[in-house]
Image 1 (cartoon, rainbow, N blue to C red):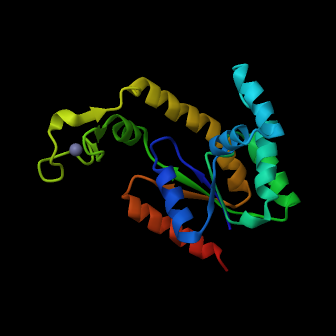
Image 2: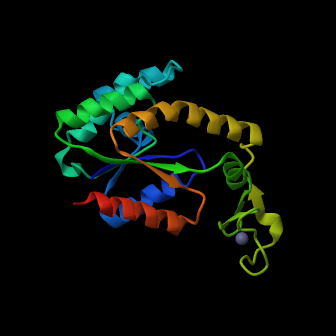
Length: 216
Ligand SMILES: [Zn+2]
C-alpha cells in the first residue's frame, strides 16, 4: 500500500504520517530527507544536488524524479511507502505516475487533511515551548496552567520566526500549488478529503478507516 498525504503546514500531517509508519510498518518518504541522504553519502546524484544548492538554485523536478526512482525501484520498501510533502506540483505528480507504473506498483490513496486558515494561524502562532522542561502548549488550544505545567511561566517561549503574514503566505502557496495535484488524484478516483480540524486520534481513526476500506 502506497499512500500520499497532503495538508498545509500546521495541519498535523507529519504526526499522522508518523502514526501510520509506526502502526503499519510503512516508510515515510520526504524529498528533504532524500536530498540530505544523497548529499551525506556523497553519491553522484548527491554531488549534483549539492552544486545546484550551492548556486542558490532550486532542485529541479528531474532530480526529484531521479530520487523517487531510487525509492520505487528499492524492493525492500516496495508498496510500503507514505509520501509526505510530495508530489509538490503537477509535473512531479505525473512523473510519479509513470514511475509507479514502471515499477509495477500503485498508489492506493491520496489523503488530504483540510484545516481552515484561522485554525492554522492559531495552531502555529499559539504554539509555546517550555525551554525548561520541553513540553509544548498552545495558548488557544492547550494553554499552560498550574495543573498541567509545573515550571515558571517565564520559561514559555513562542516561536519567533513565524508571524501571521508568513503563516498566511505559506498557507496560500500550499493551496495554490496543491489544488491542481488534488484534482489530478480526484480524476484517478484516489482522493480522500479528511476534516483535519478534529482531535489527532479522531483524525487518525478516520485515516485507518479509509486504509482498511482499501485493503481488499
Ligand atoms: Zn516546563
